[in-house]
Image (cartoon, rainbow, N blue to C red):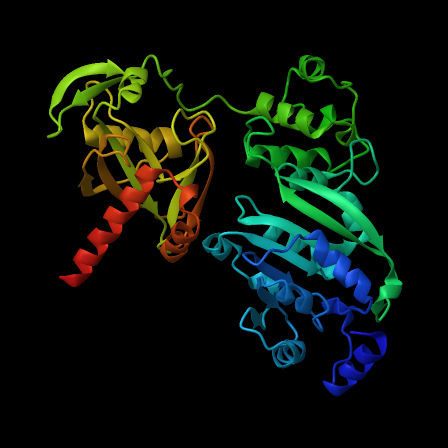
Length: 452
């Protein structure tokens, strides 16, 4: 839409741009086309656009054949877009993007995010839409230049800070170009910039406790002119040894450490695990027949290498809202690393029963001690990894939360059952096959109980 058209349209729909909503409308059509090109939109993409305004980007996105969800807070602009762009590929949602459920996007095979984020709430929107775990494969965002510089900053620069590290821990950020205020109506007083954000490969960086990392980083930058050791030395008492090991000056400030050095500090500050797991060579399982009768015992590598039938438990933990806790399996797992799985799961060892194993696994993996109810026994098959599985269910009460063990779990989160169903339909390869069998058995049991 040209400059003259924008002014006329705003008058026609009785819109006076609201500064608090970040209503600055792009009138440079060549720039709009260039921006959309940077997202490499394909017809099988699902695109979420925040703050579409008068549709400068929306029209181009729809023309690419993608399914577009445009989130527009201003009712007048939302109605204008519905009337202007008549396409079955476009849904205009008149709501605040801060209220959007990002987790619902797991039910889409491939998701991209575009938006000209309002300056006043850009940090809130970033933390919401870049939360981890995340279903978005690419984000292309117009931000205030100062914010874009902070996200893409390098160590020892004045823009490098806590937000830089919290975003770069999970994402690679590219500063694509500065966008002058002259391409907008009304013209903002500061320049903007376009950044492209892509998820990192999960194994690109060392394992760490993400919550502890965030805590240390925020504390370290709380007084950025102080030496870092004066702020976080209680968490890393052997400071000089840590500095030598990680390769930084003991008198360094927070801004002088690289992302990998911050991860190294986090790992040095991480408490000892609740229990030390056995190595695979030490784990001994009962080998069973087709009726789950014990034949003999064998060590884990032999059982898995030969697909011997053996025993396991899976546990589904729900919160009071009815959401299920899913874990993303550790990168160290010999089977299905980094796939999503039941809340807790594990093998029945020699001398153990199913019930004992379920209680042990729940404590070791999630730090929980809850009453568990048996749901179903699932026969050994190829999808279960030739495991007979007893499936259990538990419920969290009194605001207790899982405390996932970093030895077992990469990350965990609660999801509504309907989101899990949509996610499985859209991205079945995200899940460990054994969980898919367990979830099917659980839902069959639920339907049977409801039918009584």
